[in-house]
Image 1 (tube, one colour):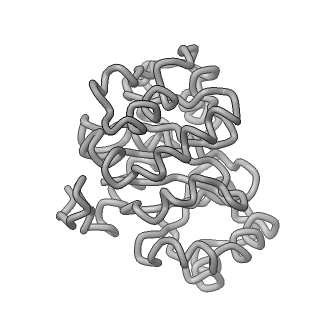
Image 2 (cartoon, helix red, strand yellow; image 1 turned 180 degrees about the horizontal axis):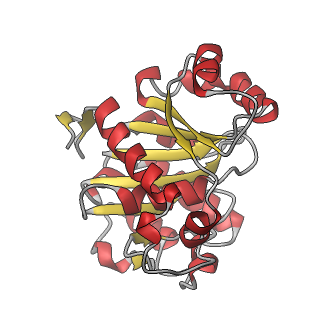
Length: 247
């Protein structure tokens, strides 16, 4: 299954959600791929090297394959395997563009479940092409007027790229609007309401450590989000693009 995490305005915690989603997936063979064209943050946040990562993976894809996956993967302290993006926006954008062109064959073949963090979907972002081949797209949004207005204005364009039954919202924090009201306005299902949890967010963003991080409210909510994605999008596609029943 290929799951894309994104936002359309600002940065309301997309990377944190992507890390938690990958960490909370039911199966261990889950890979996190940082594909933000604006530049990566995982290496800096978790004290990793910027190479190997997205740039080496894109270079291999450009030449017809990925080689040995371990040559591009590092491991987060949380036990999640990750392909980190370079901090340079120019290098990151070029790498994302290459992977987007080969997403159906390259990204799908990396692991049974691949969670892709594309950051903010700005106009002409090369990451937009990843949505077209995604089995599920999790749009991270704050339930406030500003963020919801921006999302509302972009939904028509997004629906031209990815089918509506593969898109859901993850609401971050509190705001004046509840899930039912947001679903009624946007005609997009709310897949998760993520609590304000400084400790959980701190661990998932590399600022804090702790052996009981998996018990925090945010991590539990993201584990539930993973289960919801599997339930709502039962027909994922394999590396050849053939639909299979996800588990």
